[in-house]
Image 1 (tube, rainbow, N blue to C red):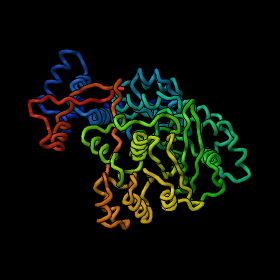
Image 2 (spheres, rainbow, N blue to C red; image 1 turned 120 degrees about the horizontal axis):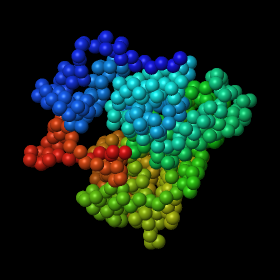
Image 3 (cartoon, rainbow, N blue to C red; image 1 turned 135 degrees about the vertical axis):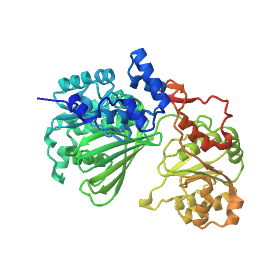
Image 4 (cartoon, one colour; image 1 turned 180 degrees about the horizontal axis):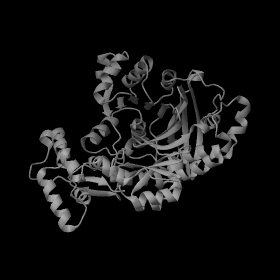
Length: 508
């Protein structure tokens, strides 16, 4: 018969007599004695739980409060920011239930017949009893902060990905036992409707969530699926190990890779369409200890090029860039880590310079956006078309403006600078962490300092900054310790003491 791990009598025996949440917070120096006394008086006079008062006052960090509840009740604490969510677990409890009780299932153990649930109120016996009856499983309760539970509910239940993948997994009965795939089985496997549905659903969610990359990572006992959204990786799915070979084979077939090669890295690409949005996917496969890891980079082939204003460039940064790009010759370099939007910035610049009076040529790997009127060339090292050979050919094509996707080696560096020196306006990117790192990198690639001084118009360093959704934005007063951290960072730029500090956050 299913049970719950939560046992109030057992916990009561473990705790000192009359110990409360306030006692724990006070012992952990999260409350002052004055705050402790004040909350006790309010709790008694207003007949409200002390936990509710602490939450409403916002004087204790949500995570610390959840850790205090975990100590009080003797249940484990979990941070959902790094948690992995099982689609099977999510599919067992409907959204209406998790919202009603402020809980989120994250792990399902078929052998032990248990389901692990993170709760903002792990002492809610009604919730535990309801989940136990709903699933027919033994419930393992974990304490978590309310903010993280609410966020996880929004992320895990807002899209249909978990439900759809869960349904597909239910159909893959033939893959319950992990088996090695050989070449004779591949044709049968990739035609399996459930496997095709799993891969399609993973990609559809990536498009819907505006992800730039999808990571499919074999672990010892599962497959982890993560999405890079606004520069941050989010753990969204956990697939059973039994479908690993089938899913990887499906993607390798679509990418025209060697399906029987498991020892060396491979690269490929394919197109994928969701509604009216067409995607170009670049696929990288890398052998790891637990199987082949796949990273899929999503490039949107449809949609307009954003303007520099829409990208968030303002003030002197925008004015300096516009001045530099209007010069007839020289080189402009955009720096930043992978995925920071360097190519998008250069496309925006080219779109602004694109007129019938100039010959614009671009050399890219790959072509990420189609720019009408621009002569775009994709490099192909397999046939000898590299950045260096392509750039050498460009100089015989009477160009006014040249875009070189990336300066990777000494030869490309020399050719790009020579082109800038001989009357061409050149744009390119460098993989450095900031603008100041560009000059040492160019010097390291063999450029003379005199040549850099004569050719560089501007070096732009950029990052992607996450924005709060305008529909979800709300103001709040930060905790004193947060204000102190901001003050240390800003120094003299920090507002005067009399100024009330207000921050914004997304409320979901």
